[in-house]
Amino acid sequence: MDVDEWELDEVGWTGDDCTYVIRPGRWCAVGWFAPPGCPEHGRFYVNGQRPPYYGSDEIVTLDLELDAELRPPDYLSTWKDHDLLLRAHNAGSITAGEKENVINDMLTVLELLPEGPDSILLRNFVSARVPPARLPLTKLREWNGLP
Image 1 (cartoon, rainbow, N blue to C red):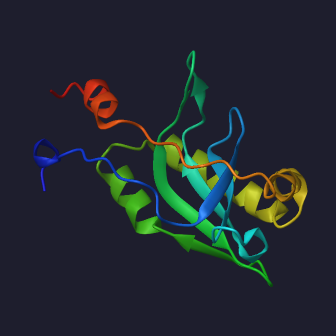
Image 2: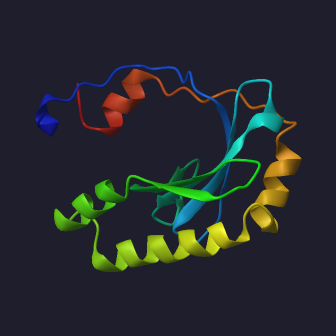
């Protein structure tokens, strides 16, 4: 499907609850995904993305396709979507430097999990539940220059 054929639609999140740690300058974010109401039954999720920059009321980043998941009890990492990262790189939408940065930062983070500073933050936040954000379709259309 060509990008000109895409249509925006309002969608509510129906998956697991998730809390992310997003650090300035880092090429990935670390999340804890858990079924609603069961934070003790979750898993770590590392999302490869461009380092964030901050607007007046927003955090801006871009997903770079590569992800990793660590599930208890052994917390062995499982890579996801490596083929999508390579495809984006081959298409020119991700530079060789971005590809290298995201892989290196993800490897560094994965070596620290399930311990380390991100894990400590996430363990302390699982008791707080923030409802998923919803962005009105009109705002999405406005940001994308659509009527």
